[in-house]
Length: 63
View (cartoon, rainbow, N blue to C red):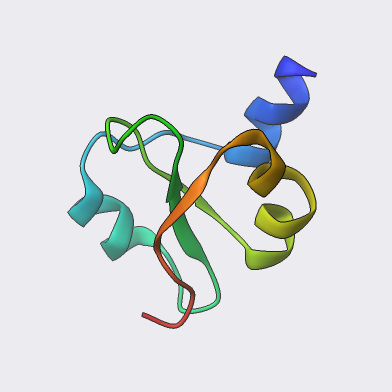
C-alpha cells in the first residue's frame, strides 16, 4: 500500500508556493500533515484514494 500511495502522490513539495506554481488548473494541492508537505494530484485521485486517508485540499483545482 505504501508504494501505491507514493505513486499516487508523486513528488513532495515543502513550499506551498512552489506547488501552486507547478500544478495545472485541473490539479489540486493537498497535504496531510498540517502543511509541512504538499502534493499535486487530480481531483479524481483525491476523491477515490486520498480523501479517506486524511489528506486535505490546500489549493482547489482551477486556482
